[in-house]
Length: 257
Image 1 (tube, rainbow, N blue to C red):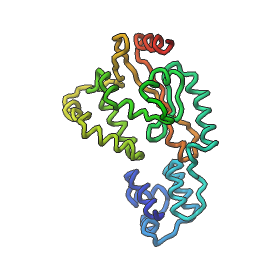
Image 2 (cartoon, rainbow, N blue to C red):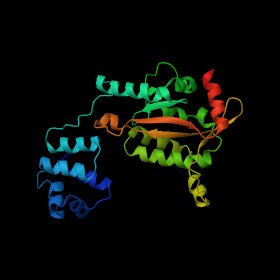
Image 3 (cartoon, one colour):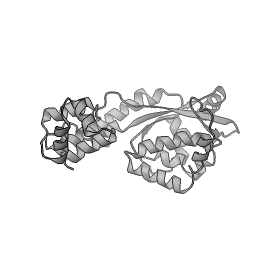
Image 4 (cartoon, rainbow, N blue to C red):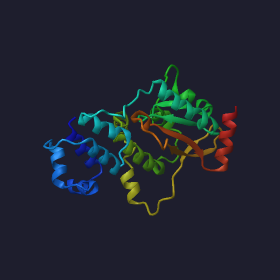
């Protein structure tokens, strides 16, 4: 990819015109146009200014540096490298291990990189054997899991929005979203939203519990605030959270067995 194409992609993703970007950079629309058409060659200082001004993440910074021909300091490490494994181990030992309910570290495709013992208890049978990095999205969109969801009409809107957001950076999630759309999983949303009068603060997922209890669950999603690696940038921490005391008691009883 040329630097001009990379810069144009960054600008388009933020819905900025060439004039808008020029204003952000204290430059001119003519100079931005020349950079995008290749009539001007960016300096390292200009690349640094673009990265700082637009608050680009490591992956976007890496793309600009690589396209410019300058040395790229934002190398994307392999998820299996010792450095990344050390970072993931830290999250597992200092975050997941202390969460009293299922918790995961997921990559940008929702492959499970790390999980705590509660997640193994609750989701282990669903992941199957011999899969080093099972995919959480495949599990929660499977027919078996779908059959346990009691409030799909309400909860699906949040799931749909989340999948749309992640599909912009993950071809695998994009393919899963298209498969679910073709299967009609989200076909009801336009009519549901048309008749909606007021939305709640959030909509938990309601599941049929093993003893008939209705489990009301949501997630807390986090990430490392100081990430400078493009691979780890896409990783998220997902902590399942019971919404009410009844769900909490049922989960604690199930997970303690």
